[in-house]
Amino acid sequence: MEVFPDILERIDAGLDPAADPGALPGHDALLADAERVIEAWLAARGEAPEGGTVEGFRLLALHRQGCRGTPSFNACRETCREIVFRRNTADLYSDDAAEALAQRRLMAMTVKHLALFVGGKLAEAGLGDFCCSSRPLRAAGGT
Image: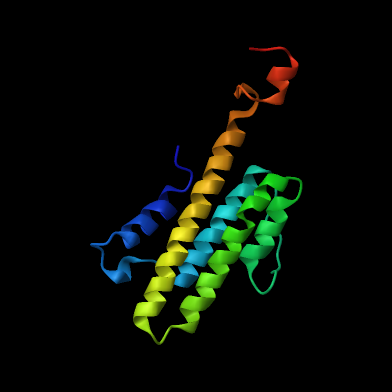
C-alpha cells in the first residue's frame, strides 16, 4: 500500500534522468509535500496540526508535535532538518541554476525518504493487534 502516491510519483518523475529539469517540483512545493507527510502522521493519530514554527519552519514544528508520545518518530528529525537545509541551500544558490537544481534533487530524494518512512510507520500502525509481534498477542499467549 502506497500512502503518498501523488508525492512519490511527482518526485520520481522529476528525478528520472530523462526528465526535463523543470519536471522536478520547486523547493517550496517539496517543503509543502514534506509538511503534508507529517500532517498525515498527525491525522492518523487523531491530532490536528498545531500552528507555529520552529526555527522559522512549520515542518520542524509539525515534526516536534508528531514526536510527542511516540519517541520512535524522532528518527525522522534529521530528515526534516535536512529538507529545511536543502530548501535554504536551493534558495541561496538561486542564481546558479545548476547548483540550485542539484540541491532541489537532493531535497526531493530526502522528501521521498520521509514519505516512505512515514508511510511505512502508518502501514505498520495499521496492523494493530493483528501483528504477530504485537504486545496483546504475546501477552495472551498467542502463537
